[in-house]
Image (cartoon, rainbow, N blue to C red; front, side):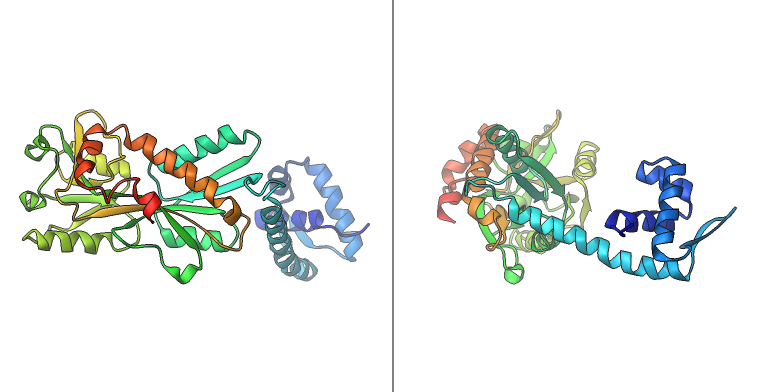
Length: 326
């Protein structure tokens, strides 16, 4: 019998679970079948790979040798398969791929992109990965684990060029204040930041300079803000609903019943939605198509906020118009 990668997977499964029975369950095999397979592997390699007793299965010296090689070969083969699939994913049409792996921090754009891709290519494999951190998503793109990263960054920033990725702007929006509908600041079309000096604040977690930019905006408004709490979106909503804090959010956020949001007067804080990819990847050829879908998704969602659309008339540098200018 020639030793194959599937045999190495068997040896690793037994070592990791410490039991032939548990390894059989992990691999979806019957225990007698796995035992017989292990015996054939041991005959091929010339000796027992595990000492088995009531306490389980422990690798022998020969087993440790095989495991040390398997733990190098299996990830290397998986990496080769992933890279081959990534390169083959461009398909015959330069404007499409057969697989799309998109990482995103969150927000409405990713959902619209996936919906449009699914309609345009029903047979394509589409997967998403969520993260609060731009650096994590960039690392996954460079490692070939993602094709695109759709993220948000503060103000006029663009994610670091250290990753060698191409970034294009989908839209630039004013940061809004999420508050109860009966809050005094909710009466106008926008909110004067200086009138919120005594408020407690909460925002979503993540990397970037947003906290520093918020503090700078408050300083320009004449006050030092209380420390900004960080949590997930559900936590932000809970704190606003309970009256504990006001939240900073995007105008595309759909507030639950009882809450509303307003842009900050003068747009002292802005949020830029961008899409990134590696210029040497198959994703680069398809990127213009994805950018078009991202822009459509943004316009569809922002249209649900007619008050913000009206407010944007006085701020032509904001909104989806940035798509053509960026």
